[in-house]
Image (cartoon, rainbow, N blue to C red):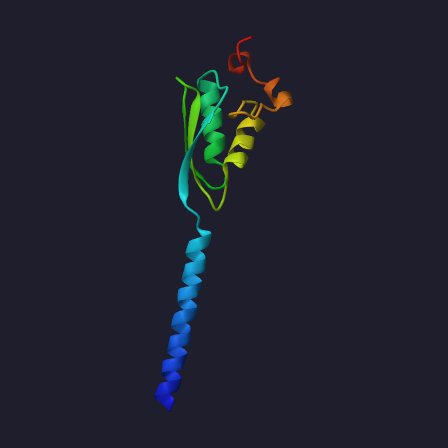
Length: 117
């Protein structure tokens, strides 16, 4: 009788632990990379965008290619999403794909960081 109770308790604990691990894995999200076209103009823009994105929750890396002005961002889907990442960029005064830069911030950028007219 005692061994049956021990076996039932062990089975219950095993099932509970398995369910808990499954729930934890589900909440971890996955790492994906997106590419976002920016309006960056110079190396100062590059540094500002990369630094701010890397400091963003859920972002692992950000590399801005100044040749095509596209930033590649690796992020965790459980902690961020493309819209949040674009908002970080627009909040710095730069366009991000179809999202326009925050105009009030754009006006404060140095001349070298502004789009040619």
